[in-house]
Amino acid sequence: MSTLLVTGASGQLGQLVLKALEGTSHTVIAGSRDPSKLTTTFTTRTVDFDAPDTLTEAFAGVDHLLLISTDALAVPGQRLKQHTAAVEAAKAAGVKHIVYTSLPNAEPGNKITFAPDHYGTEQAIKASGIAHTILRNDWYIENLLMSLPHALDTGAFYTSAPDGRVAYVAREDAARAAAAALTDALEGTFTITGPEALTYGEVVALASDITGKPVNVIAVTDEQYKGGLQQAGLPGFVADMLTSAEAAIRAGQLDGVTHAVQTLTGQAPKTVKDVLSALLK
Image (cartoon, rainbow, N blue to C red; front, side, top):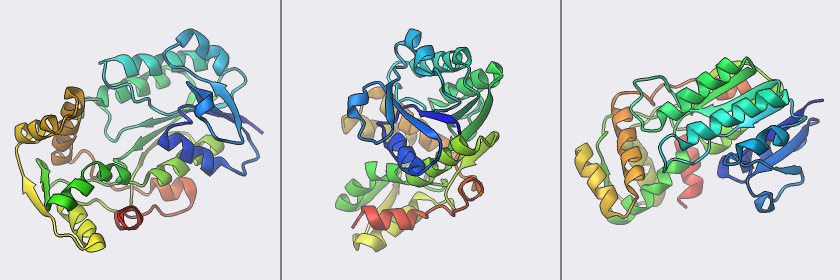
């Protein structure tokens, strides 16, 4: 049996990965900057990406490493620095296989502000010579809750990408895919999506059907969209990020539907309707 380590195990995705790994015959280690935040029966270990000198020891004895991308987006370059340090430490520690959570179409030309972090990390992993699995997770369905409740309350959903489509995936399905890739050590690059690509209009229609609240989709420019986010009090880097995501959606960079979840887990992914029906009631 192998020893598996999940970084970012106290985060939303990390917790679901640990749940998906329950019952495995492998040894599982839950890694977190603050292990006291972990509520798990698995062994815990301190894994602090901002303390790179400690990472080789943190990865000692690990065969398969799940590197969940961090949320360090406020400072340009910080996340890539964290990830690169983790990859270097994994190589030094003798890790045999890395699973990394990336972004669809992470190559240069992706319009999302943080895409270079993912591309740079992918390149670092490939250059390390360590066997690897890249999981390019599409937008989580759960992320829609950042905007849908307000839209349902006000009757208006603002977007600068009204005709673009996104192959939304449930976070739980992404977690199951990560757990499967970690335990099976299946190498390659997989884009992790749900079973369909929807426009905002189709998403809003589903939300309206579920709640009985009518919502109109209102098309705006990127400038207007960003301005609205800033007026709502979001930090500048978040407003930039979300506006860049709208541009990526318009460009069709998040609309590709794959069967990767089914391939990796043997189970079909949930639909947007499945997830929203549970979250909005």
